[in-house]
Image (cartoon, rainbow, N blue to C red; front, side, top):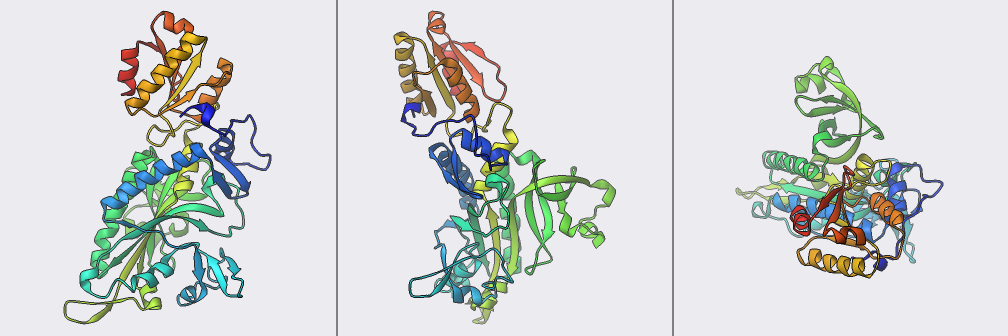
Length: 414
């Protein structure tokens, strides 16, 4: 893509009411636009990054047998009344509205109830199980406060997968399988070394659930980390009993702040009881389906990556989620223009993702934009460099520039 084809522009300032670093940088670099607190538009570059994060998650969910679907955001009252979660006293983050005929509806904050209801049309026998439908969808939660940019939104992207199993034994085997898949997701996104599988409250579902918490100074959660075992305990279950279950003592744990980037829950039969989801086993006996729920917020992860890897010049995307691999800068007259055009075509033909700054703009502005946008590698073509048959190659993370021949450059990027 050429910069001249982008309708977005970079900015030296962010909205005055935006206090979060991730959103400030993403707005200034032209990745997102702020509509209101906790609500953001994804502009072309931001949509590419979000899509790449989703692709990583999608590959891992498909790898454990997931089947992608897309459910509706509008929710019927009676479906949620069956589980007791329509009440604002039980779930206080609802956005509710009405149809023109007066029928009350809600905007989905999650999808356990409607999916359980839907699966009644497809699950009747043990032969129909297990199944693992999942989706990427915008969720709506009426958060009291929203000051963390993409990391706490009122409207946000969520990957939610739900498991439907014959019994707890079958469920437990999948629970461990998807836990490992989550670890691979965070590793592929560059967060693996600082992301911990964290014991948390299971709420009304089970004694424990698990969160995946990424260490961050801007995190809103307090966790206690065992660095050797690569496990952690959420503050809400940090007591002598979570400790006994885990076989660790207090002096082995370090207190850290973290951002929740995913969670996995054992739901049991809570929703299959409420919505009467049964199957017939091998002996012809009717049994409740055993369920689990597994969430990752791609938009939250995007905000965390933006914040975690940024420096004083702007964003620094890991290569596998960056919107482009190369930011190509041309400086000079007709010879530099022709040569940069040719190099752009060649790199593109080789499958290298290139954002080509073809603007008639001063070099300093181009370099500043490349740093703000956080593209992993900058390649510079100029009249001076062409005289020596060289190109400048600058990794965004290190800022150390090398002078390379064309062959060396393509080898680096290939």
